Length: 216
Image (cartoon, rainbow, N blue to C red; front, side, top):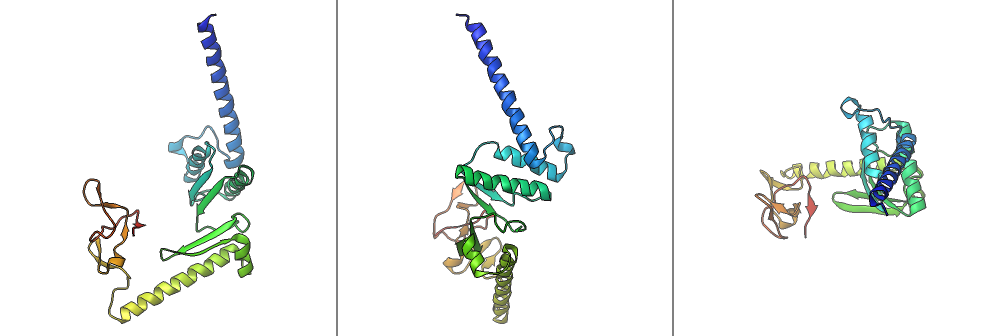
């Protein structure tokens, strides 16, 4: 058996398969996100770069997908096509998507469940149908009412604290540290200042972090 010719045969077959799959994927994503293969990233708009970024992120099939404001910079058609594709993936493959967003236009029938978090606590977690039963408004107007209530509560709390001569912020801050009651010092990402210095629950004066999590 001529292994050289055999290797060449499989190499050509692999190359053909790769080109074929790439062509199918490019046609697929061109239909969904209207991606043009002639685009050059240094000459593309923010919206075009966002489409390519989404395409690259979704090439690999997913079981659980975490999305944060994924439709920013997308036009109306690209956004509608993408959301339709994602919902189809969930329905047909049993995938799950957790989508964090403040843009609710066109989402009235898209999610299966709604989760609302405010002040670092879970305020609501219900199936979409239950949310619709409790409100006669659209999803966007319903969420708007929640956010307005949250804002008014924040303003009222700050006003009360200022009337008592306290800082408007609930947290007592000294420079870059949270001080005071230990219950107010649990905001931290698990690392202290310095080189890879980890913290433990109850340690003194955690530094603030842009990636804050609650530690008990």
